[in-house]
Amino acid sequence: MSQAASHVRIALDAPPEGDVDAHDIRESLSAVVQTGRHLWLGCDETATLERVTLLDDGRYGDHRTYRIADLVDLPGPDDAEVDVEGLAWAPPYLWIVGSHGRKRGKPDPADGVEKAFEELADVDLDENRYLLARIPLEEDAEAGGLVPRRACPDPRDPSATLTAARLKGKGKDSALMRAVRGDEHIHRYLKVPGKDNGFDVEGLAAADGRLFLGLRGPVVRGWGVVLEVRPVQAGRPERLKLKRIGPDGRRYRKHFLDLDGLGVREITADGDDMLVLAGPTMAVRAPATLFRWRGAAALQGDSITGRGELEKLLDLPHDVDGGEDHPEGICCLQNRGGAADEVLVVYDSGGPRRRDGDAVVADVFTIGRGHGAGLLASLFPRGGGEDGKGDQEHE
Image 1: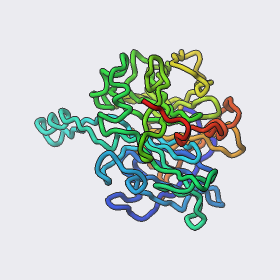
Image 2: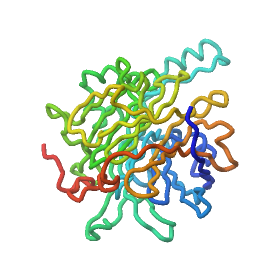
Image 3: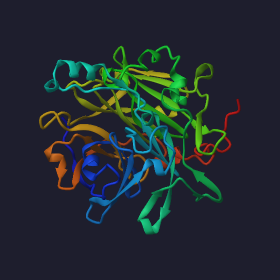
């Protein structure tokens, strides 16, 4: 197991928002991304976004909570959990993805055989889990920095308006699910719960107007799966659709990775490379490993990448302190511009050493530098497409 180079204290102590309090947030972290001096965090048991700010002493604090339903209309009830599993920053938009997976009931043997069997047979489809959305961030000095908005002026063109938007469709009929419904490798897993090796998004990265969706499941014959999509403006400002970027008019590209039989638990861009956090698909004790997938952002079609082409960077802490400590969110720390040499890791179900009063303790690991001519330039090309302007698809 690799040793962290340092640790970062992240205070999560905002007042309760509806039925969600800071304790719920600290116990269910699932995604993290950096925007300058802010960290944005997502949780898999809430319907909120969290923002913290770098303080003078090197800690993160000034915790702010934002209801996702106040920023974009959700597929389901406003306060139902979104199961945020990935965040990505492609200026001026923060992208959010839910798991897009079904969930099976969790049995408790203490309830007896009949009740436990009922729970195991119960498979739910929660519409908010099928969210793929962008939210503009606007600089607001009174609010201490970047703030998410439903709509705001475009800083590059004040006469234009940036709008929050989500992918068309709801639940199993979302545009993403419709796109993969006939896929020869994936379609059989769409009705299988995520923790049973079913379809389950658990990572999000942005590069050059495209999004890379890491799948926890399915793992197909030992191969992990990443889907690549390009969301563009649909007919309504608050809706997105998927551009046809794949073979035979497919609305996605498909990438298989040999991750030693593990699924993708998180993915983040590092220059032209992707950092892939691999972990177990089902509820088993297994390692969590960070790989470098070189040149992923430059790919122009489907791909398959063998184990020898992936660089193993780290073995991360996993299932320590009695089965807790699950690495769930990673992001590159951009301290010197260009590609990063440090990665921040946050943990779900953190053990005692991850807790410090009203804060969680994240790890910082040192990694080798990636390839590419600067992350922000690759994420936000002047030729545009990130807001969908000039890149709409007519059908």
